Length: 549
Image 1 (cartoon, helix red, strand yellow):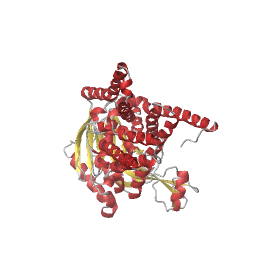
Image 2 (image 1 turned 60 degrees about the vertical axis):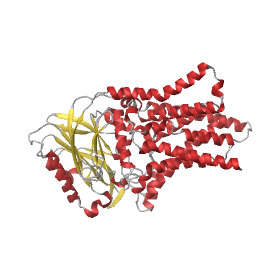
Image 3 (image 1 turned 90 degrees about the horizontal axis):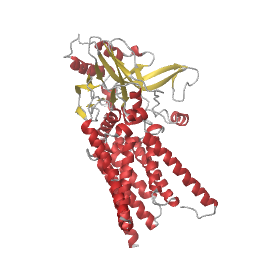
Image 4 (image 1 turned 30 degrees about the vertical axis):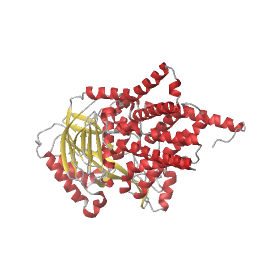
């Protein structure tokens, strides 16, 4: 009995140690390296549970994942308490399912195969989150651990973020394997070549990516083709956006900032300049009749006095469709055979009445979009329409900066889209020479959320080798170079006007050209081992073997 209590205390300590260690890279700058051994306590917990024949082990690893998720993403509750709790519990549940499959595989396979299966399954799940899942929350992708330890993530230009996830797993499994061999005494039974090989391979797996990354960090040189970029941060409280300020008053704030930014520019200057304003700044844009927007007309008129100045701003836009029947599963009735489709959009203007619009495709579940609309839209209708129903584009398109014969294609990631590395490669493959990010992180308050979101833009800069200009409604707005370094950033929760120079780039990285090879290989490996495991389980049951529990 006393031994059982000791084992439970040990399990609890390991659970807490894992959650704390894996939270550090997401909360503390320059600590991404902690993730390289952060899973070791969880693997030790699993070994203790297996050796002791402990029951209901899922409660321990699920608790570990819940604590980790809560420590790192609790700030979601600032925007929606229910959504935040759901995000923590649901994401932890999926992690726990992956770990449960690993524990099941240990009943079927021996040696290192279950651990290879664990790494492959985890990365396959991360890839599913990043590419296919409609209910997607890839915030804690393991490769994101290095978002604020950029000198160790420079090789993401070849592998993308999931290359970092693979590094995390390989490092943890090497360290855990050495610990087990030492504690069990098997290490001392190996010959000298075996010992040297085990240590050398572990050291290489952990430190080789560091050395490669540091080499790239110290040698990378940006192309020297500058573009002037301005950022307008109006700092309008989203919770009281229309209660305290009309759209005209909000436009006046941004118009004043635009005047401040352009006050030193000669009206005869024809050199290109890009100005960014935040996501969902206005809600008066109608797709198909953009000039009817007072906001669009106001700023287009303001820019007509400045040749070469282009401005990207965000809008909640709407499309009106006349049809006797619902034209799509996401359409809402507007009465008299009219329906509306909503979008989270980015528009670019240049004072010439040019119309160009892009609709955000990676949408926030429930807040912006209804997942699996064939099922959930019916439930949402019964609840009175509480979920967002924005729709995005089927294919990425660019926004073009035009000035005196110059045409500069820009990829504009709207808020949540900046988390999706492989998705953002689409901008570069379309020809984007610069990436803009417009967002509104004000919903989360002064929490780690907006800092984490900013840091993920640094990873996109590395993967794509594109300078990134980031505009947030209340911060943090920033200029980021092609190594992911934040060259200049604005304040949090203050009005700000920023101006800087971004370097354009035409080169396409290996990751941008080929996509997520690491994720595809791990998904294939997971599928093969899962099939083999299923076949073995089926054969065992068919032979009347004892049920596997």
